[in-house]
Image (tube, rainbow, N blue to C red; front, top):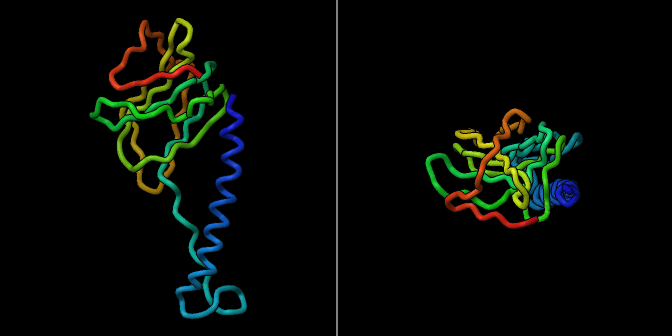
Length: 156
């Protein structure tokens, strides 16, 4: 179930808005006058987008694990879904990353065979932008083994 991520997604923007508002009041405007319609100042520009991947599961299988690794490296990072979350069909999530090139790996339930994976090499994300990736049914490949260098798979 993906309920935990859904709950956290709604709390993070509120916290971010609160912090931005607090920072704005503490620092004041940078145009020499008070901000707002009566003060003649201009509104502050909106903060830039976070550099990230938005992974949408448009397939008929649930992704139990999603990993990223920098292009040209051997080590996969941690499971981006976390230990208790599964990305079901029709769901999506956003993962913040540094700008650059990444290989993306999605896996189905590893406690029962057959095993399925989607490996999407060389996915690029630009600084300050969100790059969308769709997991499609035709992308899933059956694999005999999930033995990979640097990949730790825990049971969910």
